[in-house]
Length: 236
Image (cartoon, rainbow, N blue to C red; front, side, top):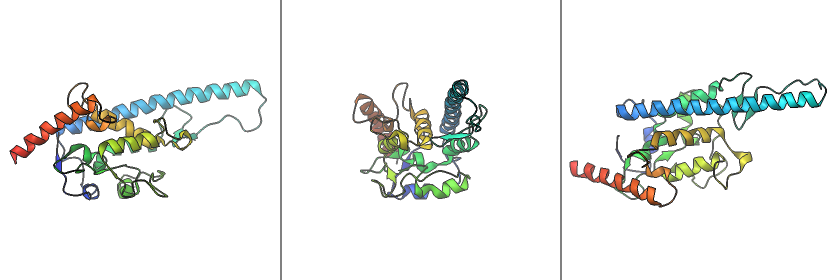
């Protein structure tokens, strides 16, 4: 566990220039690595399921009609993910997932000491325009900037709960989402963050950023965070 004392809302852009996650605790590095493995495994499973569904559709169309000269559908993109002719996950998706632990502005706010109001408002979506240098550094291409053409968050910076809500909406997971505009990259980040921060304080007590609203789970997580903050302040 590491704590970042926030000094300003510019923290996210400053953190983008950190060389790596080597400064983080070993335990947290291991959790990031495990989340990468879990995320790749999860979306490989989804990919295989989509491949089976596509094969079933192709077989059904072949049985119901004569060959129209176009053959079967292959190598199609569905919500940003390439459906290959085999069970392999799109290499671009794999690279994106493997790069997430190095996107420190993504999770900085989840570890910020809340000494001041909104001091944890320093999370950035990996698909945001502010992180284009991070994407270029890791050779991540073909990602549409999520705040292009205007945004309710013009600065592109979020508190942990707001970031998770943004990812949920953009991935098409929330009830009010437009499924036609859902983004596979946002879905990946949402899943990755859940795997990193579930059971954050104890089994069944996640990071408060994973909760919606001010329910019992949120209050338990916030109490744990306040205890951690108080210990840090007393040690200064």
